[in-house]
Length: 65
Length: 531
Ligand code: HEM
Image 1 (cartoon, protein in one colour):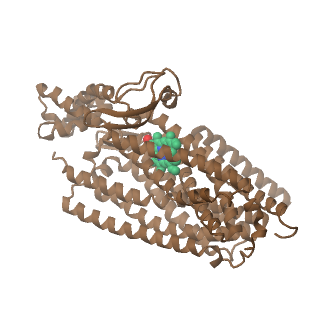
Image 2 (cartoon, rainbow over the protein chains, first blue to last red; image 1 turned 120 degrees about the vertical axis):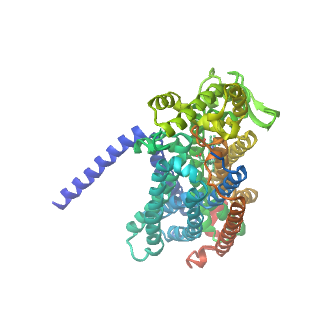
Image 3 (cartoon, each protein chain N blue to C red; image 1 turned 135 degrees about the vertical axis):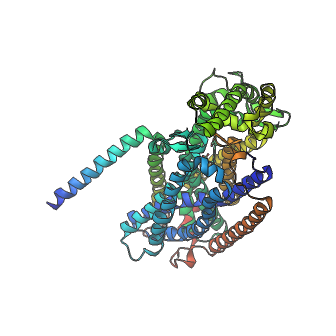
C-alpha cells in the first residue's frame, strides 16, 4: 500500500512537472530554458568532479583516495 | 507646472547609478555561487566524499560574507524609488510595486530563512535534506533577482499595463503579461547566468591562486574543474541571451539599439559593418575613427541579410510627428483634467500612444507648459525636442562593447581552463593560472557595463516612450541630494572595503582553517593535476 501511495505521489509530481513544463515552455520559453540549462550546467560541473576522482584513481597508487 | 530642477534630476540619477552599481558588485556572486554550492554538495551527497563537503563549506563561507553585504546594499535602493523618484513612483508605482513587493518577500523570507538553515543545518539535517535547502537558497536568490528584472523590464517594455487618464498613472492589466514579458525573460536569464559566470571566475581564480602556491591542491584542483565547466556553459548561455536582448532592443527600443551600435544613419544591408571601435560624438552626431567588420551588423541584429536598421538621425526625423501628436495628447489631457469634457478625452485617446513625446517636449515649451505653445512656435519646439529622444551614444556604445569584449574573453578563458583541467595540465601552465586569478573581478565589471548599457540606453525615459526621466524625480533641494549622495558613497565604500578585507582574509586562510582533513598535501597524490 505504501509503495502504491509512493508511486501515486511520484506520478502526481510527474504530471505537475509536465504541466508546468508545458505552460512555462509555452508562455516563457526563456524561463524554461533557464531551468533546464541550470540543471544541465550543475550536472556537467558535477560530472567533471566525478571524472576528476576517476582520473586521480587512475594516476595514483591503488586505494590512495 | 514647474519642472524639477535639472541639477536635482542629475544628482538623483547619479545617486541611483552609484547605489545600483555598488549593489551589483555583490549580486552576481550570490546568484552564481549558490548554484555552484548546490553542485558541490550534490557530488558530496552522491559520492559521500568529504572533500566535496569541505568545498561546499569553504565556498559557502565566502558566499555568506557576500550575501550579508549584498542584502545591506540592496535595502536602500528599494527606498530610493520613494525618496528620490516619487514622480516616477506615482506614475508607475502600480506596475513597479507588485514585483518589487514580491522580491522583498522572496529576499527576506525565502532566501534568508533558507540561508540560515544552510549555514546552521549541517549537523541538524539529513544529507538530502540539507542539499534540498541549498537548492532552495539558490532558487530563492535567483527568484528574487527575477522580480527585480521583471520590474526593470516593465520600464523598458511596458507590457501588461495602460495609462489611465482618470488617475494619471499606469494601471496594471495583467500579471501574466508582466511576468512573461519577453524582455523580462531575457533579462532574467542573461543576468542570472552572468552571475554564474562571475561565480565560476571567482572559484576558478581563487583555486588558481592555491594551485600557484601549491596549497590545498586537491581541493583547488577539484574546485577549478567544477568552476571551469560551470563557467564555459554559463558563458555560452550569457552570449546567447545577449543576442536575444539585442534583438528585443531592435524590435522595441530602436533608439537604444542604434546607440549601442553607434548607427547614426540607417544601415545599408547586407554590407553594413559591425563597428568594433569608434569615437561617437554626441554633439556632432557622428563617429570618428570607425573600425568595422563588414557584412556582420545586419544578420547580427535582424537575423536576416536584407533588413535595414533605422539610424539615429532618421529616428529623430520619425519622432517629429510623434512629438506633435504627443503635444496634442498632453494638452487634451490637461484640459480634460480641468473640465472633464468628453471631446478632450476622445482627443487624448486618439493620441495617447504618443503622450510620452508630448511630455518630452515640456522642457522646450513656453513656461514649460505644452498647452501654451502657439501654432507658430510648434515647429520650433518639435525641432528642439527631436535630439532629446536619443540616449548618450558614447556611453551606450562603449559600455556595450566592453561587456561584449569581456564576454568573448571569458569564453576563451573558460574553454582553455576546461581543456587544461580535463587534460590535467593545469599546474604546468602557471601563466594561465595567473591570468585566471587576475580575471576574478572581470565578470563583475562586465555586469556593471551591462547595466550601464541597459539603463543609459533607455534614456531619456524612465518608462520607455511613456515617462521622461526629467519628470520622474522628487522635488528635493540640491544640498539634500549632495548630502545623501556623500552619505551613500561613504557607506557603500565601507561595505566594499569590508567585503574585500573579509574575502581576502578568508581566501588566504583557505579551506584548512575550516576542515582539517585536506590532508593529502603530498604532491605525489596529485599527479593528476600536474600531468
Ligand atoms: C558577449 C555577448 C553579450 C551580448 C551580446 C550582451 C548583450 C546585452 C544587451 C543588448 C544588454 C542590454 C539589454 C537591455 O536593453 O536592457 C545587456 C545587458 C546586460 N548584460 Fe550583457 N551581453 C553580453 C555579455 C555579457 C556578459 C559577459 C555579462 C556579464 C558577465 C553581461 C551582463 C549583463 C547585465 C548584468 C546586463 C544588464 C541587465 C539586462 O539588461 O539584462 N553581458 N547585455
